[in-house]
Image (cartoon, rainbow, N blue to C red; front, side, top):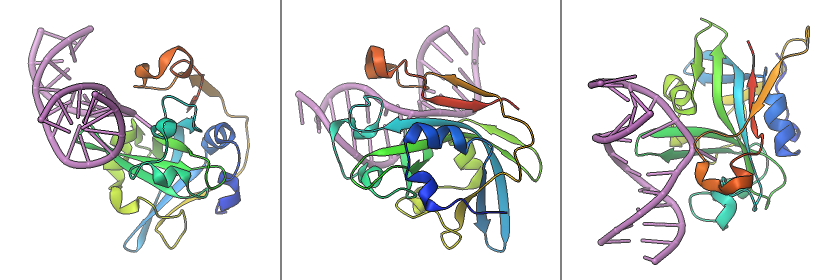
Length: 178
DNA sequence: ACGATGATGAAC
DNA sequence: TTCATCATCGTA
């Protein structure tokens, strides 16, 4: 299976979010590798996006979003949950794609919800600030082939009603109909 | 549908 | 020190 290069993520965030659907997230734990087809993503793009952690500038928490594409931004929220994001775009420009859902290729279990996914995979802040790579134990692989054109649904993002009339409504959520 | 949950960041 | 949160689960 072909590993998606870091350059894939150094592109417009919306393109990355859309094209990640169908890709496989691979996670190495000890000597086994688990793979998951990404089925749901959200884009958080730039300084002006009021739903993004970076909309009020760089902080200790969100500084990973300002790094080079391919970094992992894993943050803790609601006192309970870890959420996994992949940083996109050039260094200095805060943007990331939130992984909200994925389906195990091994047992076909579908995890819907960004925190349910990380919990099932055992992803925690230990990954925060790392770079996608085989060495890190977390990487992305391209789909085997594009047999049929995937059906992609877009919608406003989840849980960000506070972001104002524009940013709470933009179609930055992408779901793969399976 | 709604409230409880709960640690951390960021604002006051 | 106080408030809000890129959810989820339990109870209705």
